[in-house]
Image 1 (cartoon, rainbow, N blue to C red):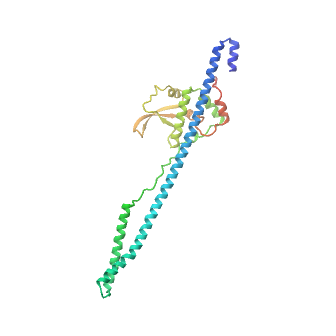
Image 2 (cartoon, rainbow, N blue to C red):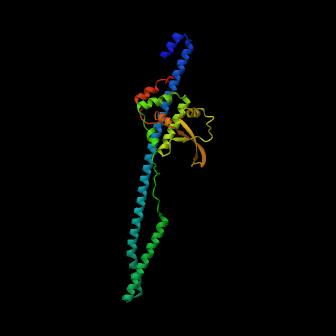
Image 3 (cartoon, rainbow, N blue to C red):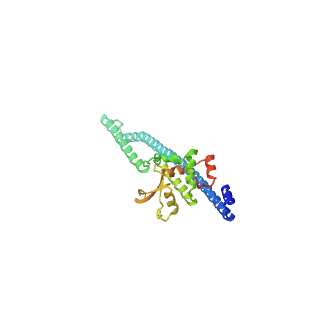
Length: 280
């Protein structure tokens, strides 16, 4: 603003044009600040959703494990009680039946051996039948297997932390030269890249199906400025070749300004609150 005042006084420029230019510069700065705030707010919301999902999965895993343990204990106790009851009832029934047949109450050694064999055979058959019925009525439940936790890509840690001031100011210079739509689009891409990096995938996102790079001015601007790089890859989900929008090293550095959660450092708030300088 001070520069514009000096130019007006020296060059005798139209005051209205100068005011219009100043308002345009202020509007651009305001859009940058709003875009940064939206990006940070979205990143915080995503982090909260990630924490809730992790807590929910842990709770479900614990509940499933407890349920499986309780069911296994109940089956084991039921089998033991029934075996104990049959072990008592079957011999008594066999002896009573045989004693009715032998009214004199005398049993030869052969009869005693037959009684023991009969008892063992009956108990074995009962135990076999119990095992079959238990497998049918109370089938073994497969234990809950939590989702496989992959090793995060190194870019996840990078995008989860704000840069130091020297590198951050250099990246802020690049970010502030983006148009408002480019800044908003880049913030979305960087958040998606961080989520993919968390699952072990290199930082980037799939181009939305049906979209075209030629008809997407914001994406084309980000490519021209070296923040992202389109790559043709095979998508295992759709089993078709698609366009993968990968963050470049420059994009990774600039993404650290808008993606990390938490309170931005004071120097970052100060840098983003000032309008871009064409001379930077």
